[in-house]
Image 1 (cartoon, rainbow, N blue to C red):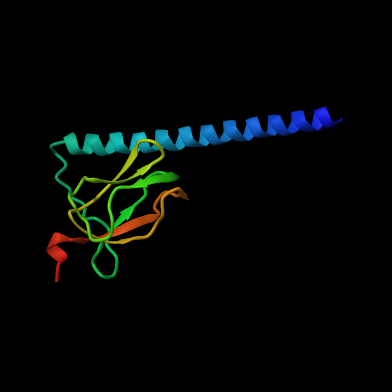
Image 2: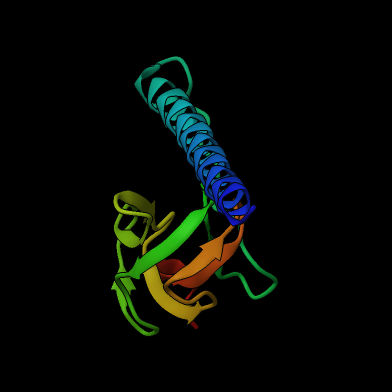
Length: 132
C-alpha cells in the first residue's frame, strides 16, 4: 500500500512540474511575440507614433515587469542613474527588464528571489527632465 502512495506522489510531482514547465513556456512565447511585434513597429517607417512611459502621481516613470517569473537579479540601486534601454533587472536566467526612460532610480519596490507577475511595478525612475 505504501508503494502505491509513493508512486502517486511521484506522479503528482511530475505532473505539477510538467504543468509549471508548460506555463513557463507559454509565458515566454507570449513575451517573445510581444517583443517581435514591438520590433516590427520599430522597423515600420510609416509608424511615427511615440508612446510616453507610464508615470506615477509624482511624475516618476514606472518600470513594470513584462513577463511573470522569478526576479533573479536587480542590477541597480536607489540613486543610480540609468539610460533608456539599460537592463535594470533579470527575470529567470536571461529575460531582461529594461529602463523605459533615462533618469535616476528613486525607489525599488520588489526584492530578488521573489515570484513576480506581469505588470508588477519593479521600480520608479525620476527622469532627467523631471528633476526639480
